[in-house]
Image 1 (cartoon, helix red, strand yellow):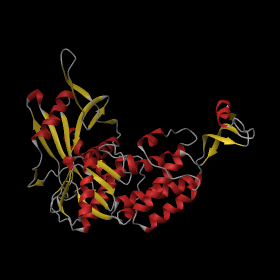
Image 2 (spheres, one colour; image 1 turned 120 degrees about the horizontal axis):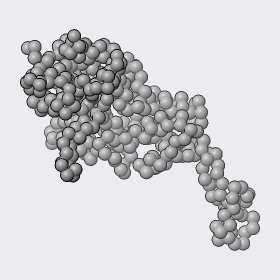
Image 3 (tube, helix red, strand yellow; image 1 turned 120 degrees about the vertical axis):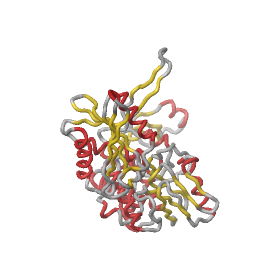
Image 4 (tube, helix red, strand yellow; image 1 turned 90 degrees about the horizontal axis):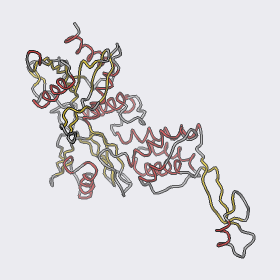
Length: 419
């Protein structure tokens, strides 16, 4: 099956040339993404919000990339390449999905198809995992046998073999390659051979299948995948199993039941950016600790029946005391004429509320850098004892030089508060 790859940017409308079958398949993605996050007009304008990644069904593969420029024409291949680089960089640094093990970008970005990149990683991981060790497990077997092995089930034997004295219903355990882990991985490999359009991926998946000859292809269900348990003996196969599981059942918006030809990897873009920023703060050291999305009650009823919670993206502690709260927003802050034009009142209200509740005087709003050499900005809210300083800054997510961005965040804070 040859799929058509369609590439769009998150939150940017794109005119596509679609046949009726492709329109039907794209509209079916709404059941996974949500009705309000995918819109397709009758004349082929597609808009996807909230998610980046890919989703595949039938003959259609939709790839959603993060915007890295606001107003660049979509046909610009360089922007697609850079956007792919950004997405892989965010995934690699944040380790948002721990089973990926992404390769270096210089080799990955050339493909400009994130689904093919993931298939390549999966095929390579299956081959190397099974070439080091085969996964065999004890499986309970009950059969009518000429030979006595294991335990005779006398009640079943009396019912099944009332006359035959040469047959016995026996139950035993056999050390088999035919087990749930191997069967799931084999089934996913076979499905991906059908989905991939890359000749190397097809070849590598077939090489991996050599180690799974004795496993069988099965019907994948959520209950089956969730029933697999890992022990000390089969733990080496957990990473590759989790990646197999990801292709068909790790759908971020909701579980998808039924048609296992839907293959997806969807991540809320803002959550990915938030976790990326957290990982940068977490690398500070110097006696600074970073905590991600700690929850705190900020309002409660006197009778204990009512409560509301807040969950800041990042809280920085020094000497066991919070000293800065940071909130990350994946949107263009629109820096022009030495100021940021797209900082909403809601963003400022939000971090000001964090400061008051946690008792800190310093908060930060962190955005992606859509323009080069964007300086930070400091604003004041409140007055007197209630004054809170808000740092507004942006980081360059196009760079793979993570130490540079860690240094930039350190400088951003040090410049304002630690002189």
